[in-house]
Length: 279
Image (tube, rainbow, N blue to C red; front, top):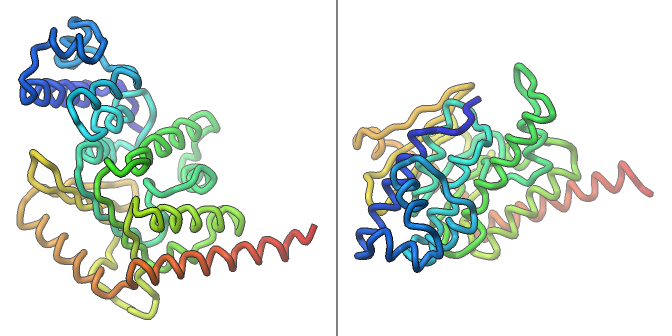
């Protein structure tokens, strides 16, 4: 596991603060007055030597019109654990203005409920301690904050039907999890598409992929396997991943039909839980 404090993350955070401050035509002193922070603290943040607390990050977002960047990027800095192979992707995720993900077997981390996340993160070898699992889950819940407002990135999830059918944690956990996804989709915080079993072989069958776009960087792709993950930045590789995603998306159910399926399967899990516990 990777655990903060990651100097590279702090440096990137500071560089982004400086870039946005200068783009707004503000000196450090002017920003400090508007954000109700000391100029020295802002200088330390820009130099990668300090991190803001959540209240400071929120004020920086508001003053600089950063669309939630400074709050959403905090999980990469705040001492919570992520897998080594995911650490760089987490940094990019905090800066993205659009994210598209394909999940072959499990609910993507950004969509997971706490109960579902505990089941997923509590497995593996070596098995994490309760304390380690708590930190992993806390990080995962913090990541999901980018879905809390309409100022968050544009996010689209393509879910294999196996994601809905694989019972993680039992029927009650699955019912809550699928309804959570359906609620996010119904509130227009995300778009979700289910790739049904009936499609058979498809363009993304090899595994998980996340596509990200940015205001000031070229797009990237992140592909993940067992205990491994890789950032793809070569334009030809990124375009290939984007084209494969679009091909698979073309085989998927519409957003509306996907929400209907999520609710239907959630209801099946609810009935299964009631039969198992008639009291």
